Amino acid sequence: MKKNIIKKIFIKLSKFLGYELIDQCDFSSPTLNKSLNDDLSIINKKSIVLPLGDVSITKKVDSVLIVFRTNTDVEIWDQNKKRLFEKPKIEYSLRALKSLIRSVNFSKTKYPNVAFKAIIVDDKSKEENLNKIKKLIDGSGLDVNITSLNHEKYKDTIKLQKNDQTFSNLTSLLQSFELGKEHGKDLVFFVEDDYLHFEPMMEEMIASFERIASQVNKDIFMCPADYPYLYMNNEKTNILIGNKRHWRTINQTLCTFMTTKALLDKYWDNFYNTCLDRSDPFEKHLNEIYTKEFCISPLKSLSLHLTNVNSSYGLSPFINYKKLWDENEL
Image 1: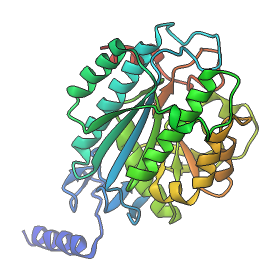
Image 2 (image 1 turned 60 degrees about the horizontal axis):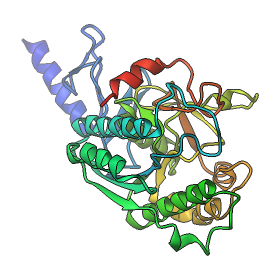
Image 3 (image 1 turned 120 degrees about the vertical axis):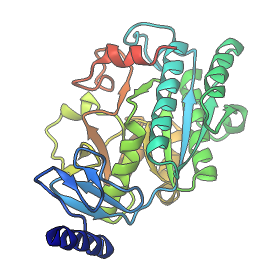
């Protein structure tokens, strides 16, 4: 009895001082009142990963703005190849949006105080396809707005391109970046409509951002996909511990990534210049940022870029592609 009283006092004192205790006899944390198999981290407060202890969160996430770019007609931009599963483009757009909605709603159950807002930038979808998108978001329970791509606004800004598809892609990207700059407050997630997301994607992105950004004491860039092209060069990388998986530092991304409003403002010239003309590589000006700032991608992937099976910019390794595809059937 005396031992139990002393134990309770010690637990209360530890909690008061901000320490967490581990009882390895029954694999629990008496200060958190949780099994060690449970999620031990506390959003906006501390990230706990066994056996590494806790990280105090200084880079807190209060809101996430998602800017989702859609083109439901172009099969693969600038290519004549077919995507994996060889379906019409609208099928990829809808499944991508469904998987994103599922991931956000899953994250909301974990982090109910994080505010989510989504803007869909649509590039001339047929009315039939647009109605399918509207039906999907109407039942999502999320704050989602659809805005049409304004080609006319940028005709004197973006350099004349060899084809309309390239001009539309640059226009869509610039309008998305501008919306992120105008409406973003905290995290901004730019995402294209040919990515399928695992349900824990958004939870892991938010929690790992808080942990890693707090550790390095600076805002970061995050890519949700583990691209095959990242393994084709013998480049050094650093491995970091996120919320529930490892992350690696990278120096290249495509145009689906998450960052902060502060970094969007800081490197606005790079974002803007990316859209003025087609560069080689396309993301040249974005990649320049990663020579100065941390950019990371997950091991293994949180999202799947649905391109042709032979594309080095597509299918992440060690993923059950068919299972993820089927899970997001409408």
